Length: 373
Image 1: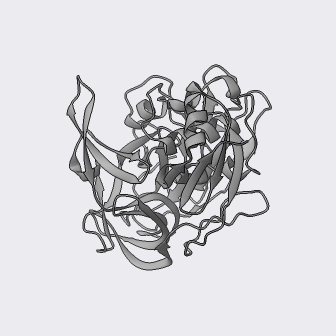
Image 2: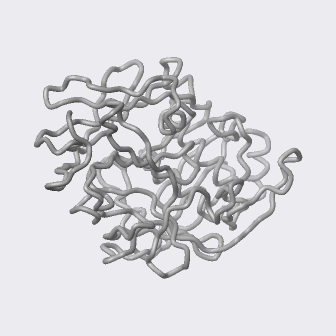
């Protein structure tokens, strides 16, 4: 590879929707893209590979990640070091649990090919977008941006890069109670106390494809009135500070719960209807009440999401747990649990406190927890 800057023509990039099993033990999923990183007319393959730290998916919540670049002959020309100073590398070696498909292309019309990856530290956390670019001098893939894409003014259709939600370096997004969703800023770090900051927010969760230089298709989420979540898909045009919407492919609306044959949500915006989409029995054990870093989850919605992640993703199951017909195999569907209003009967609450099985009925906009008897 000889040149990084693309002067005479634009980078040719093609999305490669790849999901491949490398081995049965441990289970390793590859997601990636093919992209002409240096405009030499040949596509390089960029692959993102998560691997359980101890080699056993069912026994570990901890993962390390590799980014691999291969040439047109499938020869590895670069892989990220396990220890290093690269911003992406340092983050990817944390306990990240969820990711969106890797996308390649000239996302900002600057004449360079970029590689995009949306990643979250857990199944119940917001996605942060990492932008990587080939460094010709170092002969490596490096991270030159890592931030959220946030709509500063609700309804403006203009999204700008931000390192933190609401520009607060200690602010995070959490589901705080049965019917509240908030951006929360820390008051006293030592005492681990928080202040609620309820409101509305729209953000881009992933750049899904590059249609032409500076023009991308992306997935957007909006939080309304502190609890109601909406999802849509839009065509975005680069502005220098971020992106502006040129067309809503799918208008922002409450996500559908219709599923395909594999039980994965199609997730196009449609109005809610009163019909349950999943019903199952579960024991919400102590392992379900903490995230991948061992921190206590603060809402029952987050606990329910972690329980389904343990059941489907990690194979951690309690006696009395039941399947949900595969609906929560999808990380996106698991994330919906933390956005919903949670109601429970008296018997259901008593069963939860006693670590006994409960019946969980999930509707499109709410959850009901009851005693199974």
